[in-house]
Amino acid sequence: MWNGSGSLARLGRRSLTRGLSARNGRDGTGLSREWTSGAGSSETIEGGVQRNPGDARPDFLRPQRRDRPPHHEALRPGARQETLREANLLLITEEIFASAQPLSRADLSIRTGMTRSTVSRLVDDLLTAGIVREGSPMVGPTRGRPAVPLTPARKTLAGLGVEVNVDFMAARALDLTGSVLAEAMVQGDFRGSEPEAVLRDAGRLAAQVAQQGVSAGARVIGTVLALPGLVAADERSLLFAPNLGWQDVDVVEQFTAGIPEGTFGQAVSAANEAKLAALAVAQELTEADGEEQTFLYVSAQRGIGSAVVIDGVVEAGPHGWAGELGHISVEPAGPECGCGSNGCLEVYAGKRALLRAAGLDPSASAAELAAAAEGAEGEQAQEAIRRAGWAMGVAFSGAMNVLDVHEIVLGGAFGPLADLLRPCIEEELQRRVLAAQWAQFRVRESGTGLAPATSGGALRALRAVVDAPQDWVPRA
Image (cartoon, rainbow, N blue to C red; front, side, top):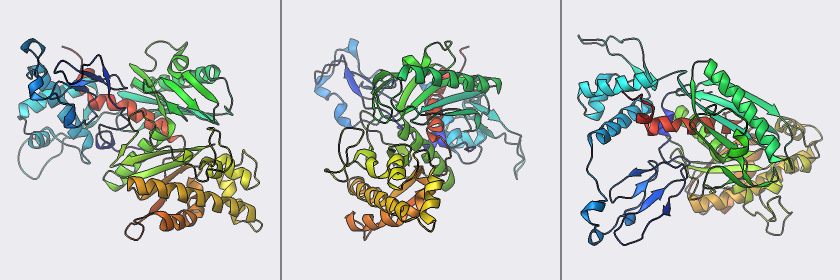
């Protein structure tokens, strides 16, 4: 589990953001234009456009100079003292969270160019809010007051991640250091289930974990629900989850039904399970390698979840639907998939499909499949793995040709099978990727453990603190 302090800032402010959508705007007339993100937060940038703090939008969104509005509708208001304070508070927070080593007030003054008195006032605000904490003074090589290290606070603010998948539901609470405060998992079979009953059970499980986090001394600030399907841009509606058999469900309403207000923090949202798991994996690899990673994340539960990560940022696309490698058609005339199409990667390499092809019980584990393939009479299991590796190589090579991403991280049931799948995958990549002779492929196993999407959901909820620390500082 994670205990580093740098990931929340290093993962980038664009992680899992939705595209912007115009609302009540008037295009090209020079009048006001309002943009909102799926997360519901926005801020003013040059040109008067409002955007989510994580979205970098191109210059063509700016009104042309000839379209300047009347003075009473100014699109570029001057900075106020409060605006400058918020910007400085954000900068200090990101420096503390992004640093691999604890920083002192003097360090922050040097890094940001702010005066020491300004830094001290801002740090005091962060200490009061429970966002950072002070360590024991460190005596340096020169004379003077010992430096006091500043790090993300433990057990003060917590994010809650909840996952409902085909064969389990889980919840996990993390604090600002990435440490687990509480977690729980319940096995089950939720294929073709009634979403209302399952989501209410998940809500009760999550409430218990939230209460355990509170008992540990933390305050839950937000909750993110992970689901194996397409989630609408409103981040509360599930459009389609083929392996659950759910369609057009207001998951947030049913998840929170009957739960006391405030249990799940200030905001509850939903996101795709694989995207959140990839966020957790991105943190894991960032902490291990000291820099943001670029990779394709592919995980097998019953089906296949996947995501594209570029420089540590989960690239979810304008609607949040990007990276669905499990439903790339490997053979257009192949077997029917649960999504309604034919020949998808999932029908060859999904966990359920793999076990069936290997002649094993659907409840068998990936470790049991690996053992069967290595046994004396493992021809059927070996052929199932070879077939899955071929299909994965075909799908991944197409993604690599489009995205120029040459690293694959295998999670879920694929993890224990990585050594068996790797030769077949790499064989297809060498044949099918146009840049194969100049590229270095890497297929590796994720080490995030069980239900990584719960960790990703908790991390995403905690981003609200790093993105807008002023919202958590008590008003004078």
